[in-house]
Length: 144
Image (cartoon, rainbow, N blue to C red; front, top):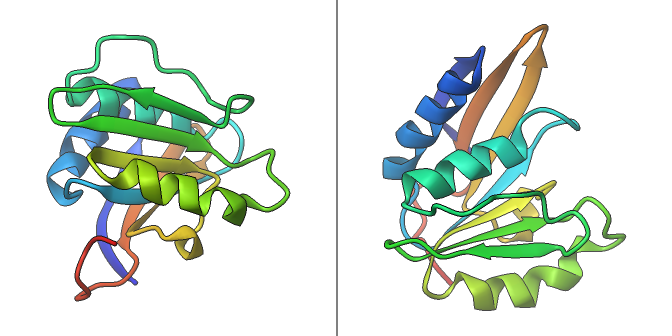
């Protein structure tokens, strides 16, 4: 893996700025595994990514529905939450199908072995959080 970006997030403005910085690094169809403890800001980051892509609706955690779809002018943002699943790999075929035509596929509680192209970690640092974006397979061709 190769680290592409590291930021310290103190408030919502920093998370919003992170979303803006991430978009140029994430090609269309990218699958991003989001990791961090409960309350680390995974869903908030998804909200800011969707908004930055032009989505104007409400972004919520798909903890119970598993997957939400947010249409944007650049393509759909697919937002999955794998927290409650005993075997998240069961969703891989569905997520691979959703990837086609999507601008981003964002997997809360995801892992690189779920077919992710990128790993974004949110680590608490007292009142702040450290965000790190990792390219899972640097130098390999993107896509399915």
